[in-house]
Length: 339
Image (cartoon, rainbow, N blue to C red; front, side):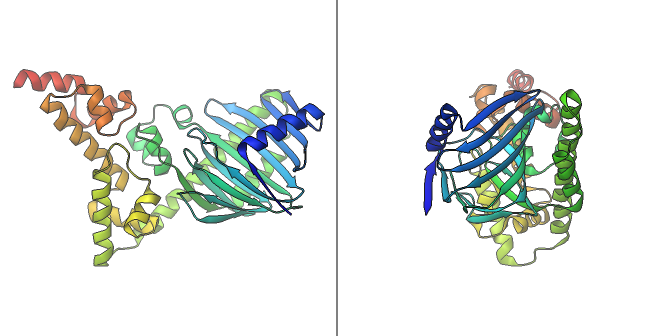
């Protein structure tokens, strides 16, 4: 038998189970534990801990009575995170973003699930466990310079640089070092504040190892060459798509799909053809377009920022000053005086 539930059903089942006393919620120190039997669904254990501003850790264990199709049809906020699978295997389709993907032992993924609906397929009787790190980029990476941002994945960088957030999903392999850290998290020997500090250090270590894997992949990708004329034309087409959608550009994966390349080939090809990453090219073009709009004098600084795709006016001012030596308002006033 296969059971189908939606996000709203899940909330109602959880509330009913709490009412009947089969599940419980307990606040403990810096975290919260939910555990017990969800009526007609299965057993669940979830331990959430806030580690610091912009970073939390959740340990999740669950087992279902029947095969389950879970339709997540309610939209989440722009949550970025890393999910490490310790046991079990689940198939997930992120509609409009990925085909069905297997998430299983030895794999982890990085994601931003804004505006993405999911369908998940779970098997009965199988024990599932994972560790999930939730990251709020603006709080976790405060005051990073542009040079610093170049060292983190573009998917997080776009959030920090004040542009519209695009959903993404990337799967990686859990390395030996990651396995060690995950085991240390599960076997944490401390309580209270010491536990929080210990878990925070381990979470940051996992994020660092993820960034290292990202950088190593990029070095490998960029060491390859793109010589095929057809691929070069597709890369040029990708550039035109970016520049014609300044306010709401597609994600790298969606852009690759539109031009018929995989995202790795698009990344390394863009660097070869244009001498920089697709995101940096778009960033510089936005600033140049903003400069031209300010010179025309037909729009306010705030209107210019949104026209070229910056959601954050403060970041727009910072990036503009770094490139042109004046903040947008000063540049606008200077140009008006010289006319």
